View: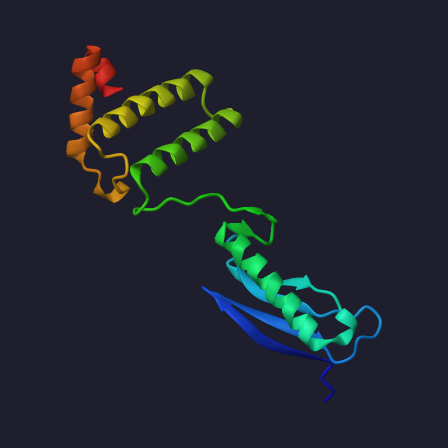
Length: 177
């Protein structure tokens, strides 16, 4: 069996293994390329991502040097949340270790998306932003802005509501809303 290419692992970064594939002969449109596998979250399958590099007149050392530079660029892009399938930045994901400040900005972004989709009214978004402004200022006054979301308790929420109800002279309806 004739093997037309040789692939070798040349770099590992986090969960990614970068391989260099060099054709045995450089005839026609054969080009060396770097490839790695990227998990497509929509299909939950790994997809091979290829990035071609120059032939460099068949000089293996120059090909490897160019591949290493390309891998550094790819690792930098992946570190910045780049999605090679769409060639766009992935949307930030929040989780229980995210700060409450990150969660608030994420939620407001989702509310803006809801307005753009005409799921909510402009006034609703405005009220959501006002409420989050009050909550953010409360957190800043208590030095809790960088608190992890999982650490936020009912006591914090009750204290915020009581403080704002007194400060803004809210009645029962405003408080419950």
